[in-house]
Amino acid sequence: MTRWRTPGRLLPGGLAAVLTGCIPPGVPDGGTVRYPAPTATYPAAARPRTTSQAMAAPVTQLPAPRPAWEARPVTPDAAIVTAQTYTVRSGDTLAAIADRTGASADAIARANALLPPYVVVAGQTLSIPGGRYHRVHPGETGIAIARAYGVPWSQVVAANDLVEPFILRAGQRILIPGVPDRTSSAAERAAAFRLDVDSILTGGEPAVAANQPAVTPTPAPRPTPGAPKPPPRALPATTPVIAPAAAPGRFIWPVSGQVVRRFGAGASGERSDGIKIAVPLNTPVKSIADGTVAYAGDGIAALGGLVIIRHGGGWTSVYGHAAKLLVRRGDPVTRGQTIALSGATGYADRPELHFELRRGRTPVDPTAQLPRR
Image (cartoon, rainbow, N blue to C red; front, side, top):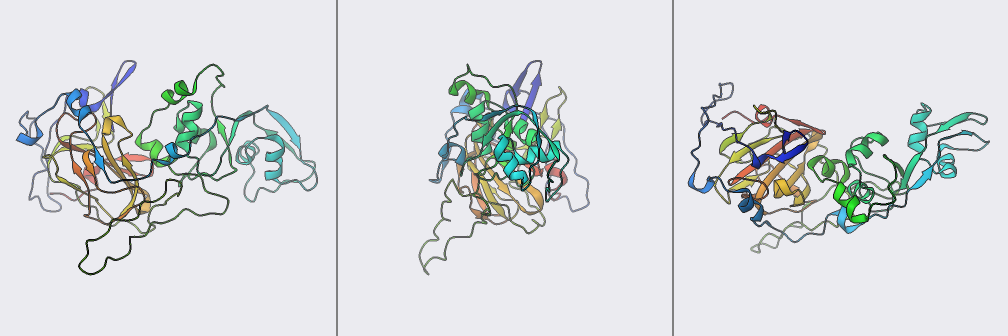
């Protein structure tokens, strides 16, 4: 999403001036795409709206379970562990030492430069890192854990050196950074957490039981001849999903329209993690490649109606400001499939699509990956 940087504040991208460009049609592969000078002229269906009008625009979507971070709330009952040393006893394992001290086995391994399979020997002295350690329960998500403690999930990811695919395990202990605040209320802690695309990608999946893999969604059964095609089954919020294993192949444009905001830093220092494309209301928004829906909802206020799709090869695509969402979390989608209808929801000043493309956690310029026009 767009972050407009001013001293001491972050302003949503729809509240600042829009830079204008276009994707000219008919430019063959290998040709040069030239952007015209900025213009204030838009299609009739894409004239600027006020922020209050945009925020009031409704989002409709298919019936679906609540997000996992809402379906499985977290109790902030972390154990406080004092930094100490531990002398390994005969028969000890790293897991047993973690249970005895209350610290995370992963944190102990990092603190002592232990490598898999994490062998320890009797008489060895280990450093036990102190801090708050939360024990993960089945179905808990990183987002819910971060909200419960009022800390950014990105800081939890860094403190625990979490990596792709960022799926927690039931029984796992994770270190909660920061100093415990005994005076803040649950509402204050929740308000301190900010949901964004990165937190959904890295902390949105529910924890799995030990040795239980995440699932790859499958399409709904074939309909009876002559009957309408049924929608894919709604995946329970407590079931984690993974991206397809196959590489996504060549991407396609999600819509055809005028690029009114480009990727990267703007003239005033603001930065956009994607591009914005002006289109008429209710324009079909297409998936740029085969994938699995990681999120469909309106939980990020600035982006309004939002779909996030995981593709193979570590790619993720993001589609915001939609008026209607036509897929649900866990749905398998194919390249060119309509996943939403465009709108002016969130902090949009006109009907438009906010589009991002990420490789791992890193936003990349979509225009460098999409075919030339």
